[in-house]
Image (tube, rainbow, N blue to C red; front, side, top):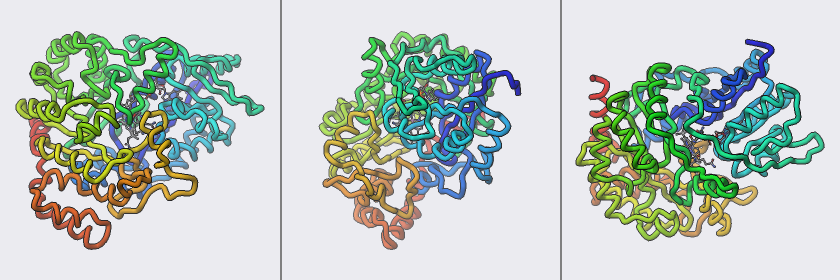
Length: 523
Ligand code: B12
């Protein structure tokens, strides 16, 4: 370790073994600092399990995921996370702690941040949560500064100023607490050019973190940030608010990378990290300009050819695009179905599209033999059991391979959060945040609901989440038995087990997906 260099320790709080994608945010920030001679390290909580049920364990138990062998590749760390963190502080001696957080992961970070703050190391928090809840985040005594919006320029300027012992109170995007308690709130600065950013420094992460279980297999998967932001208006998502935030300074948050840049970045992933599978990380893949897609579709098979995964809106799927994806060697597509009632989806979620359009899009993918996962959300404000059954019905109509069904969570900064607030559905001071359900785990946001609504109880929502895949895949004459399985009592759990055993063939039938990955691994 070079003692003269300025040293930044990133903290990435995460749920145990939630080994999804590596995050672009901290990886890009680290790359920028390193380019400028600043030393970086990361404390990532992902592999610390601490006896807890993991996110994936629960999804396996409710038929949303196949059991995989990730543990063989990324063994959980059977040690105390805080001890490791203290040791890292002692060895690395950071000049700054840089915390990257979302709303759900902020509480996971606090003990570590307090520990560092207690040792007089300044702490800056950044990410979506500080961006849209700066007042809440800065209230924590252990947070000295935060970054609203993009962090590339702000963090580098801060580190340079701190290293040179210069004043850093006027750096755009930063909120800073002065020793007298006054909080300085700077305006946000201009956006970065996504085509000129350095490649993300995924070396920050333990090598085990590159493995990702998928349909019962483990792949070495690398995520690529395709474009930043999204032009759509979905009321449950933060992207429309990012667009508004940057519009206030005349900037367009949604920015595309060029096809050439994407190809070069993927080549780097292959050389540097031996990537054998690519995840195009974008809220909506086809939000990229058509010209960029045409160029990418031409270059990708010639220069890359690896199987890849993407996520997009059903309305963006066309026959021509499906053909091009096929030629590119697409492996899986995630489709945001989100809700099955057209009127509700358009009015409450601002996702205007006909159910028939969704059905047709999924049919196109099925015809092309492209495995699909659909994402559903239930428990939106004022949602009823009947409305949830519209979503189940739409899932029954599309013969998709895999189903994800999540419970809605109101995130501060989104349009739908304000609706929940106005209607008084959010937890009040002292309320129990969630209800117990033996199959569930209270720690994971997607498996709990905080809303208190007159239209449906928390208990009923959690029972429907547990049985969503059964309702979507089993014959209708089983609905009365599935209704019993919704219950969180002995009778319900017994029925849930029985149905799972009787229909194990149907439920294990993520067959298309398995074949495609198997084919790839054999090739
Ligand atoms: C890709 C993605 C993921 C990936 C990567 C997660 C990650 N932390 O990056 C995966 C699949 C793992 C994931 C998981 C989750 N996600 Co997600 N995800 C996204 C998505 C679509 C894009 C994020 C991204 O890569 N942006 C591009 C990068 C470059 O931007 P960035 O991460 O925001 O970082 C920039 C700034 O925020 C800032 N910054 C970030 N960190 C720091 C730190 C410092 C010190 C500074 C100065 C600046 C700074 O600088 C960065 C560069 O400009 C967003 C939508 C969105 N627009 O944010 C949802 C989003 C972030 N996810 C969301 C959620 C809810 C989750 C989960 C909690 C879901 C769950 N229950 O499992 C988990 C949490 C996992 C975790 N530990 O973070 C919500 C968060 C809402 C909220 N207010 O908290 C979002 C906003 C979607 C939504 N509903 O609106 N997600």
